Length: 230
Image (cartoon, rainbow, N blue to C red):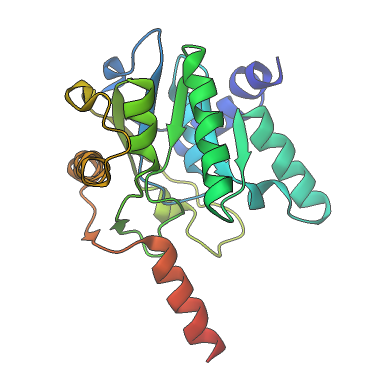
């Protein structure tokens, strides 16, 4: 109920007015049935804009920190994210990662759309970073197609550290579904998971036109934080 209100009455119309998103390849998103939408992550605007242009409800796996920020702004943010269909995920360790996978599989088991960012965190500089293999585990375990997605221009409208977004158009591109049924039953093989993840990342790269960096974004952010402390 709240999801529909946000999408069709409150947030959705406002986002479409402010950013006039151009949508390409929407026909690649299935009208029904389970599927994973795997995209790049440039901005806090990404998980708000994608649901605004999709015809179907979509659920995001989002880091728990988004839901626990203090103060009125933090509570409002958590309210909007939950209303937009996001599920908080604790990323503090292996057990937490397994819990996140179970939540994602639960969404897919109901025949719904699940959104995930293979990079695991927002890009610190607008480039595309190495994907983590959780997206491959989900795809191979649930045996669902992957729809690659590229957000173009969202880093410019709302980069890390900026309080409010700029008002300018953005583009959202959906690519042809990726079928990994040839790897059925191989969800525990590390080399297969790496290969599947890299194929997904390459599909996003082709759609987005970003520069690719063969490192994890989280490691780059940690290095930047250590440099500032030093």
